[in-house]
Amino acid sequence: MDGLQAAILGIIQGLTEFLPISSTGHLYLGRHLFGLNEAGLFLDTMLHLGTLIAVIAVYWDTLVQLAKKPFSRLTGLLVVGTIPTVAIGLVFEDFFEEISKTGVTIGWEFLVTGAVLWLADRIKDRGRKTLDEISYTDALIIGTFQGAAILPAISRSGLTIAAALFRRIDKATAAYFSFLLSIPAIAGAVVYQGAKLVQGQVENIPLSSLLIGTAMSAVFGYLAVKWMIAILQRGSLKGFAVYVWLLGAIVLIAQFTGRF
Image (cartoon, rainbow, N blue to C red; front, top):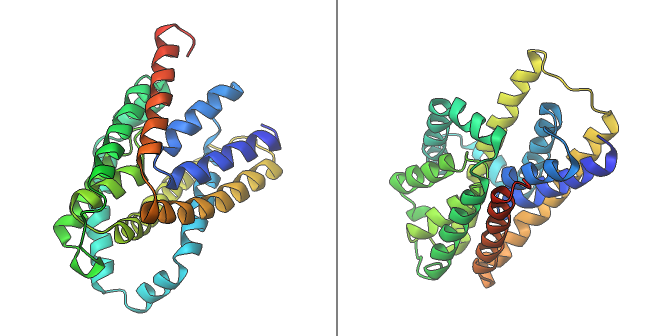
C-alpha cells in the first residue's frame, strides 16, 4: 500500500465516520477500488485512532470537565448509551465479521441508512429536549441504534443522530450527544483491534503510509464533525439520504451483474 492509497482511505474514514453515510461501507468500497482485499488491521486501527483524535479535539473542554466530575449525569448517560453497543458487538461479533468480509449486504444497508436519514430529517425541527432533559431511556435507545451500526454500511453517526431526533431531542443536542457517544465506541474499536495486533496479526505496511492515513483521518474527521454540526443546525439530511440511496443502488446493480 502506497502513501496515496493510505491518504485516500484516511480521508474516507475521517469524513464518513461522522457524516451519516457509513465509514465501514465506504472503506470496503475504497479497498475494492484499489484491489485490496483488506486494508490491513494495523492501518484500520490507525485510521480509527485518527478519528478518535479528531472527536477528542472537538470536545476536549467537555472531556476535561467529565474527567473532573467523573460521576456526573452526562457520564452516566454515556455509560448507559455504550452498554447496548458493547452487548450487541459481543453477542453478534462472528456474524458481523462474516458479513463485513463478504460485503454481500452492503447495498441494502446503504438503502436502510438512507431511509432512516430521510425519516429523521422530516422530524428534525420538532425536538425540544436539551442535554439536561435527556433520559437514561433516551440514552439506551440511542446506544441500541449505535449497536445496530456495527453492520458495514449502516452509518453510526446517522443512526445515533436519527435516534436522538426520534426521541424529540433538539438538533444541536442530538449531534453533541451522538459525537460524544462515538468516543467510547471508537476507543473500544481501537483497543479491540490493538489487542489483535498484540497477538501477532500485524501487516507489513510502510510507516509513512500509516502516518499519512492517520493524519488524513484526524484532519478530515475534525472537519466532518464541524460540518455535520452546521448541517444539522441549518441544513437537511435528505441530501445524504439520496446519496446513500444512489450508492446502494449502484452496489446492488454491480452485484447483480457480477461486477462487484
